[in-house]
Structures are given as C-alpha cells and as structure tokens.
Length: 375
Image 1 (cartoon, rainbow, N blue to C red):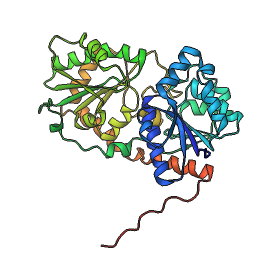
Image 2 (cartoon, rainbow, N blue to C red):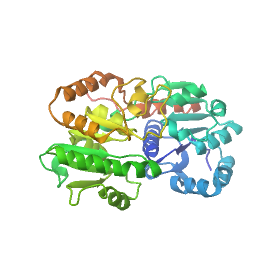
Image 3 (cartoon, rainbow, N blue to C red):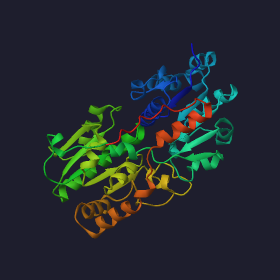
Image 4 (tube, rainbow, N blue to C red):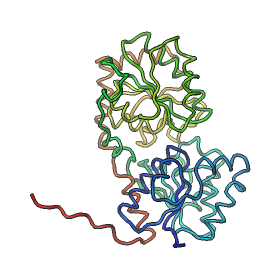
C-alpha cells in the first residue's frame, strides 16, 4: 500500500466538520495526497480512508481505556506510517496519539480548536514535545497552546468562508411567519447539553411571554433528537409555539433577529453574520487564561461580547433579550461592535492550513489554477 500523506483525526463531531474542510482543501490543491484517519460523518464524505469511526474509537476508549481502545489502530498505523499527522482539536485520546507519532518520528500538526474543558486528563508538560506546531484560530494562541509553549501560526477563523456560502429565504422553512425570529442553539455535548436544555426551555418560555416573536430551536444532528426535544418541552408551557429543527444552524442564524447560544463556534458564526446574540456558558466549565468562556472572545483575545453563565438570573437575561429584539440603542451598539470587528474574522483557514501541511511534507507544486479567459 502506498504510504499515506497524512493521518487525520477529530476531537469531536463539530471538529470533524472542520477536519473535512481541511481535507477537501488539501485534496483540491494537492490532488496526489493520500489521507487516512478516524472519520466522523463529515470526513466520511471525503477521500480519507477510514481506519475507524469517531464514535467507535471513542466508545472503545471509554469501555477499555485509551491504551487498549486504540491498540489495533496503533498497530495498523505502525505498519504504514503517514508522512504527517493532523489532530483537529486536542483531548486525552489525541494526546495519546501524539505520543505514538512522536515515538515513530512522525511530525504532529495540531489544528487548534480546543476548548479548555476538553483538556481534562491531558499532561500539558508533555504536549510540547509531542506536537511540532499548532495552526491556531486564536490570534495569540489559545491558553492551552500558550501554557504548553507550542509554536503556532495564526491561520484565520475557519468559519467565515462557510458563513459566506449561506443563502436562504424564510420561505424555505414552511413554519416560519413574518414575526421576528429568535433562534436557540443550546450546543454542547453529553452532561453539558443535558444541563443546558431545561435552561433553554426557560429562555423560550420567557421570550414568548414577553415578546411578539417566533422561536426555533436548532439541535445538533449527532445527538438523540427526540429525547432532547422531549426534555426541553418539559420546561415549556403546554402547546407553546416552539419549533425544533435538526441542524440547519447557519441557515436559521442568517434569518434570525436574535440568537441565544452556547459558548462554542456558534458565537463566531453569529458575530460574522452580525446577528446580536447572548452566549450562555456552563458555570462549571473552565475559562481560558484571559478569563473568557465563549469562543469568539477566546479567539480574538479580548471581550467582543458580554458572556452570561447558566446561573445568571432569568429576569436579567429576559430584560436584555427584550432590548436586543427592539430597535433599541442596545441593539445598535451591539451591531456596531460586530461591524468594527469584521476585519478580524479572516477566512480561508483551511486553505492556509493546507498550504502549511503541504510544504511541511514536501508534497510539491499546487494544482495549476485555470487561466482566466479575457472578456
């Protein structure tokens, strides 16, 4: 079997989407690349040869422990080592894989989109030796990168290009009316999501009680949709007019008057769309070294928007929501802040990363661009 150009793996399902975009950029610009990896539903649609699915590997590590859970994966990799390993986001599993590649003298590139809470159990003192470089969406490197003293390159925000492709009309959703749309994006996984769902149900109930608007809840596709909907409905008045949608978060965000979000990538996407939003984080989660919880503030290294914990009184949040729904000075000020930050949301992060990786392994020349025909 031909030696693969790269191995790629993602920390989570949302990181798998970023990984797939990076793979597509690599294979488009450098068609001779050969990729292998741990695939989620997005990477499964690319040319990466699967060595196991994200769910299967994570389940094996949970039941057997990381060492036993990836034993067969390591054996497969050792028999045909890639030229470079790409880890999208960091975790205890990726820490173990980075150590394996270090032992086999395979350079490790971290495509860095790691929230602080994902680092539980990671020995940061070992990370610097295992990772050659981080391609970071944070201008100054995230708190994790700074703590581990890992060299990094700022590659831009991996969201702007994706947002720019969204073009949808409200008529695409049969249930939407002409009332202002408030979209709720609970986000998160596992225990964090379970904790947030009742809170977002309270948001919906309070918003409907005080404002003439419509509410849609967008839930992640990889979660148990029916169970989450049932749990959230327990926090809503009977027959409350709330619609639940599987995915479609960018389309709904583009149509929203206001968004109530978790603390992850959705905060960057809302900022790029210039949509006022309230990011709500789990108070039990960890802030970065600068004290920020939501990803847009962490990525910019400064406070762009206010952050609210799940312990913030509902009455205070509902007052803020009502102001942002109206054509108020508060709403105008929020939009002006987003306008002022527009130049900081650079695009083409996947292409920038593809260029670095290709140069690192000496893939060669890019696919020639098509000549422009004079008009």
